[in-house]
Amino acid sequence: MRYADDTTLLADSVTRLQRLLAVAVNESDNRGPKVNIKKTFTMVISKAKMPPKCSIFINGKVVEQDESFSYLGSLVTSDWKSDHDIKQRTGKAKQSSAR
Image (cartoon, rainbow, N blue to C red; front, side, top):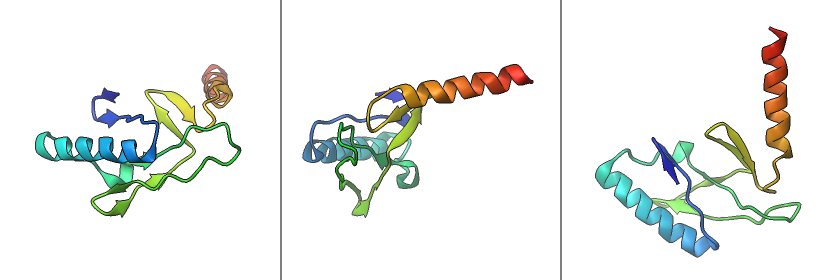
């Protein structure tokens, strides 16, 4: 998925994700905007309490793995549940109405 300069890549294995990322990095290098490794991370969606590690590289540098990220205003978590997003949105709404 790509929206403006935000890109989300989905794959069902580390190998496939690495290949997909290599294509995305190559295309970004050729067409722009370039991939910023400081703003790039991986996340494994899993039912396990501790998601498995995912070792992905860009130009030989390890990409950081996170357990959640915000995409177009929604919180996406490694457990794929929406309760974290709902709590976050409810908190923002309460802060807004308190003003």
